[in-house]
Length: 323
Ligand SMILES: Nc1ncnc2c1ncn2[C@@H]1O[C@H](COP(=O)(O)OP(=O)(O)OP(=O)(O)O)[C@@H](O)[C@H]1O
Image (cartoon, rainbow, N blue to C red):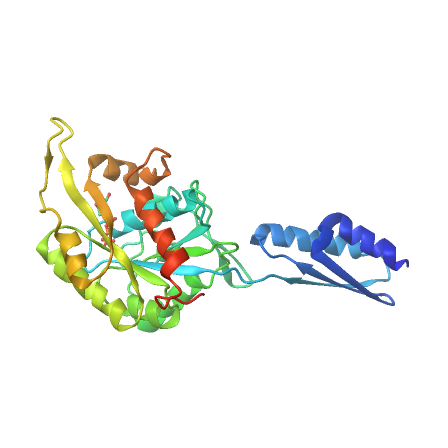
């Protein structure tokens, strides 16, 4: 066997990614799969194995990859129904549209709605070596949802340890090159939030609330939970702010206006922006067609830009940690 022939054959399929060592009939190949997703990595491993193989040879291929620098953004709300899932989905898509490589984790055990919002309802994730492979969505944001771990239509009534185990499966899935994980948390301050903070330490949290006084009081509780645990607040988003009548165009404020911004200011946390109460947002969301996917969207993109500025600028100094 000619050592150079083996090296040439491997280089033909793996280029500079492969390092070949030949020891008699034993061939060892180390392949650097940095930046490849799970599918491409498997394909490369198979191609290298085939290129190096011949009768009488013992081939061993080791695939290595640098772990991407990945940050987790927790999206939380003090109470349910304020549009946290809608905001999470659109924030994830807007972040991806401005260049982040984003994965979305739907950790809302009480109402996992991301598969519907991202148009992949009914698609179950596969697993490789017990590691979940996120479901690809039409918006370039891979997704894993608590709802995909149980049979369709079944209610999730898990106790603490089961919840923690399920969250771990979603967080430690094969996220490939994703540099940002957006996690849609359940409302309130329960088991999932605590596990998220303690075991999967997010770089920062985004708090979603509506302008009503009660929602603001609950949002303040959510801010407290993260701040007490040393997780920085990236900012507050006011959802369902201002209603434009689809008939006459008049803008009214059924839930008041400016409350979230004032509350954020009072707490000394950034205000990221408002999302109007707009029937088009509800219709598009229900249809699995998130408004942020529209290149003309001017609602979610400015919010995503602020989040990126925070990630690129302040996360380290604010105490964010990598995952
Ligand atoms: N800005 C908006 N304009 C119109 N409808 C909205 C808006 N935001 C959310 N909705 C609608 O409000 C409902 C609740 O939203 P969503 O499921 O995102 O809230 P949530 O806070 O995640 O709720 P839960 O806590 O129950 O999971 C959905 O029907 C959604 O389409």
